[in-house]
Length: 197
Image (cartoon, rainbow, N blue to C red):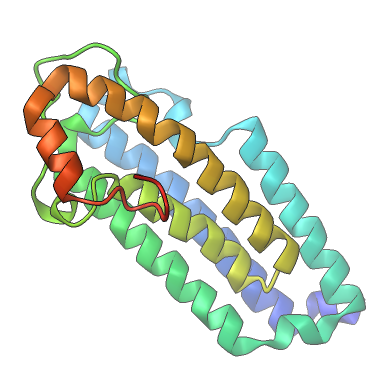
């Protein structure tokens, strides 16, 4: 049990909690910045029941492995690579939010509004869904940083499946709103999530 209070566990868990607090806090702050306090709810923190269950499972995996297989958590090159993934994912996601401004929302719009425009510049010139791409990298990176093999696989599959369903659904509406302009953009720029067209 001393491994739980050792340097490795303290470093990895503090990095996890710092990245979670920064990610969700900055999502909320950016939502308020672009949409105004009266138009933003706590759902802009992006913390769902399924997300909490996944994070609790990953912490349980970490505690079991650090107790019974502490050497697994000492793979610093793996842990540091995960930390880089967290930072890269965070940067991509925040660039997406800042570039889109008021056009970025946490909910898929099914009705066209005046402030909703097709964003194709900045990070959106590289990938169509940088917010999703950034979150995918960030979430898997949290588990790589913890050296959690089960949760790394689980987060990869679950988050990928979520976006594999969400992207086609969202793009159905984007084609309705922006027509030929979006179709050309869709052909020219990848989604940003591996193997999702």
